[in-house]
Amino acid sequence: MMFEVIQGVDLPYNPMYLFLSIGFGAFSISWMNDSGFWVVSRLSGFSEGQTLRTWTSLLTLNSVVGLLTVLALSKLLPLD
Image (tube, rainbow, N blue to C red):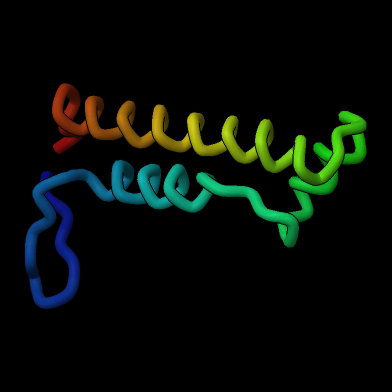
């Protein structure tokens, strides 16, 4: 089953993979204006510099692995 979008164009993939890739892409970098950054910083006792190095690196790694997983799943399990 193909899903249709604007003007009847069929997507070559399931929209769930699109939503997952957007979510993983948006989750990639945490900066000082992110509330999660401050929660991790205060609860871990890290300074701002340490939190930038550790938490942001961890989120970026999580995002890249998630995007690669979604890409692999979209090829192996197309969900059409």
